[in-house]
Length: 610
Image: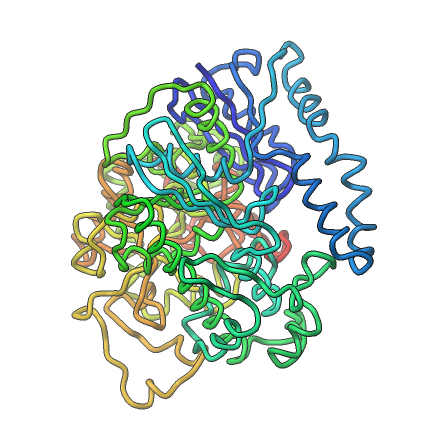
């Protein structure tokens, strides 16, 4: 039995294909169109999923969309009526789109599907938005029975859902509804500090350690009323997202000392860093109250998380260390893209009642390596057509050559196997560097990624050595947990360094692996197992053999504003448009010094800033 899940029309459109309950393919549309967070109907992602199984759409038993358009329209209309006449400007802006397109989304979806395969006569099913998130968390997890928590901006009405999964059953017990939303609270501060909503939230999280939570009490006293069980209520007097075209209003500006930062005219200051630290502290506090209450209510020791808020790896680390749940699993594609997987799984298990058995150890995401891959022969042909100068190597030769480049301080583009599904590069489409280098973070940010210098990088470490470098006693394959660097690996700051604030802290080495150690001595850890990603694991071992260190910087293979590379051609363009010194695509190794100078380009200017 084949089930195709689709998410589209808001951001991060995607498609996922299940065959007899197994995820056989999943991809985001942005990877094919090269448009960051592409919301369009995922025609390319669907085509890939079908090609993976040599199938046509008419061979699919069920097609399911990840949310229900009519309840979403109901929420929009009721919100405008509740705030009338103040919401008229936003109402006037959005209603033409809804009445012309989104209100008839089912017809649009059917038309798009039949354009792919005119012989398809199947029924289109719909899952609720938070049901899709919850299903992606529980059914893809390794747990047979678990509590489930989903949090995001908003779906149809829910913004937060609490549930329990058991076998093939998933029941949502209660919810918090719009306009009360932790995701929208965090997005409001994302907007106010000058970052883009729905893409810049992770920047706010990365900025938080540079600040102090001096506005925590101000937020709790004025913006959010939090109850002991973690349920909450947002004071809408300070927000504008219900009725306007911005997230915050003049009253919010007055509370925090001025208007939202204009990123084109204003630099980040200590004030913005303190705001980031404050809302991060509030988010963590609310989440801990929620998870403690859910653990007490359900009596379960396993917790599954999904929704955009579940990508906050700092908060996830706090939940893990709080230990109210012994086991934690987070859907690596927790945002709307993962809704495609969740919708398909919801139909397969909840709707069709197919049997499900979990072994409590292995999840269903296969390391998130669910996207396209290329044979070495195809790679060589594609690279030759681009004019690339490359050397075909055996696998052992490639690993040693790449370890040599990394040891010498080179940034390495690493394009291997199947592409990752979700927002993180996990060793399939990655840029790698020496974590021991005191200049690698700044170099990668400014000369490779072309982005803000404060942005942290994640360490990739062999699973078996992770406990020797980080205070982490569980696997973290999806880069969704933050842990402290081991104290014996850290470097204490002197008195002058301790007095520094904000960005001035950035260039102070804090550990033996300064390129991945954040200013608070933490790191967003990815553990790499031989079972899930053998070639990346071999590279880490080869680097360890040369240096004694099994840790590499791992960041996504793209520049700021660009989707992660999807093809060998994408990888070569990025390589030639940045200061990456070496590139390994399959078994083909390229060095920048060997390339034709005419192939260089001003690559990073091709993409809008995120």
